[in-house]
Structure formats: C-alpha cells, structure tokens
Length: 190
Image 1: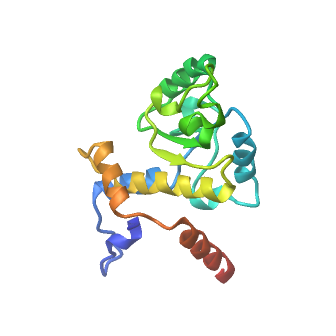
Image 2 (image 1 turned 45 degrees about the vertical axis):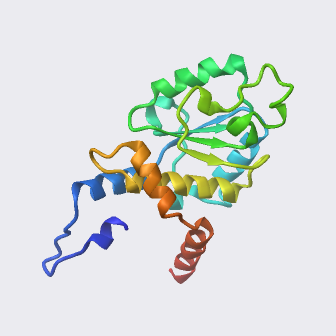
C-alpha cells in the first residue's frame, strides 16, 4: 500500500498515517552503499548501470556510509575485512539496513569448508535484513532483494521491532518480476 493508496478526500486532502508518510519517504529514497569485495561486485555495478535503471525505484547509490541507509555486501568477506565492514556499518545513520548479496557473503560460498580466512557469512558480524542467493546473483535478483528491503521498510511501524516487520514480510511475499513488468508497462504507456 503506497501513500496515495491511503485515500484522497473531496477537497484534495490526503488522509493517511504518520507511519505511511515516513515509510513512503524512506522507501522512495533508498540510498545504498555498495561494498563490493569480489565477483558479486561486478553484478552489483551492472545493476547500477543504465540498463536496469535503479533510479526508477528511488534507489540512488552513494559512496559514503554517512549518506547511506542500506549496505550492500557483495562478495567474500575475509577475517581482515570484517573489522572494516563493522566500522562502515556503525558509521551509517539509523535506520540502516543490510543486504547480503551472493553465496560468499551469505554463508562463505565455496570457501566454506577449507577457507580458514573467510567469514562464514556476514551475518556473524552485522545484522542482515535481506539475503540474495547466487554465485554471483543476476542483476534481476539484486533488484528483487532491493524490493524486499523496500517492502521491509513499508511494513515498519513506530514501535514495531525489525523482527516483527520481517515476520510480516515473510507472511506477505512480493513478486519482483511482476513489479518490474508493471514498471515497464507504465513506462511504455507514458
């Protein structure tokens, strides 16, 4: 449910809740900071290119953690890099979200068994909100993950914990392909 779905009265007055306004503003201006560490970073960069046009979803990549509200961890996180991931996460303002992209950042990937130097999932050091599987995941998968983050933001309420919002999101799954197709139809119509 978007902001405009709340209802407009006869006198052009928008009636909605504070939660809806805040969530609409947050999800319509998501500023991710890409933290590309390996081959997943190539797919992340491809997603930021003009072919996929993330700006139509209100997603504007940033290079500074102080300007970002979403961290995209893409690739293999080594033990030496873990400290820097934590530092960057702590520099981000609240509310902040984390999307783990690819098998390596999700669970250690192919280095799981024999890679003593590889962290077995970035969720061991920072809380992760959305996981995007794949080795490396396609740009469409990353867009689907970003939409999941937007849905998570949409489900948040003042006084509702992040865990409760994640439960609500799990109960009401979205179909990213349908949303992308709807965006394309809207673009063609205009």
